[in-house]
Amino acid sequence: MTSIRALPPPEPDKPLKRLAAEQVAAFQDDGFLLLPGLFASDEVALVQDLLRHDSSVGEHSVGIIDSSGAPAEIFGWSGASEDVLGAFVRIARLVEAAEDLLGGQPVYHWHSKLSMKRPGSAGRWDWHQDFGSWYREGCLRPEMLTAMVAVDRTTPENGCVQLLRGSHRLGRIDHVPIGPSHGADPAVVARALEALETVACVMEPGDVVFFHGNTLHASGGNTSETSRTLLHVSYNTVRNQPTDPLVIHAFEPLEVLPDDALLTGAFAPRLDQAALTRRIELRRKQKIGEVYGYQVAGPKG
Ligand code: SIN
Ligand code: MN
Image (cartoon, rainbow, N blue to C red; front, side, top):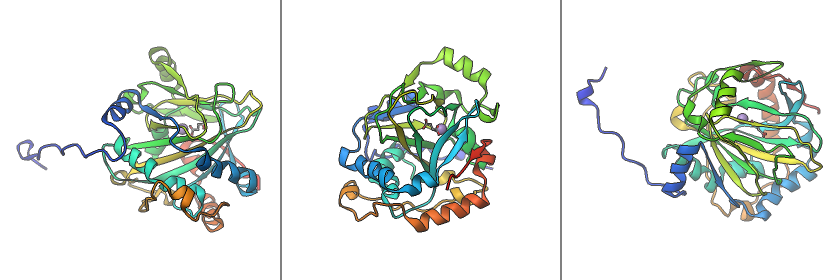
């Protein structure tokens, strides 16, 4: 035990690597931060091309069942991969912004997913906090966030993500079964919806919204004729590794890539098959949906 008299002074603030102090302050107030046009159209096109030309993504995607029983399609992975998706995870502009927003703490890759809503698909995401699930793995601190990269234009009609401004300040809300799915306690969500502002993440391809692990978020079905694809890249601080790590979320050092790497780097334009095989084996061993309380349908292939 340490005597309160012997405590060292608090650590001085770490210098920011990427963001302005005002941007960090806005994230701390709102629980999210929009960085418009963080990726150029040539860079986003790498993911659009992958989706168009590599059938493995569709074959290995799964459906997360929402509270009405409809599947929301995702292709998820963790760890490193030597392909363009892996390059997005490691690109300096995301990693450094994440570290700035998490108090200058070094981060590692928690997991990522392509979250896809095809035209006319009904699958929704019920209101939840990501830390509501991640906490179940023994991460003590909510030092976790997601960088949500728009691959397509996202609108209320095609099921863009909605965020509750300032909801990260409510702390962690209990997550409970909701019909066949799982989400933040609906009674608390109803009060939060009355008290706080709902913000629709209308985004252009290349825009990025960073949101805190405790920020309440949801999204609706896609009632439009355009597809809605988001790339969610989630980071955890190195000091916040789960105490009882699922192998899938164990710490692996993140080799950061320079900002120009997406356009100059030699990345496989198709999925890294070795990483895909590792991922399928892990998924067989570890039923992450069950840990989080979700039912998972698929994969289709
Ligand atoms: C999520 O919250 O995990 C996904 C939300 C979305 O992509 O609509
Ligand atoms: Mn989420």
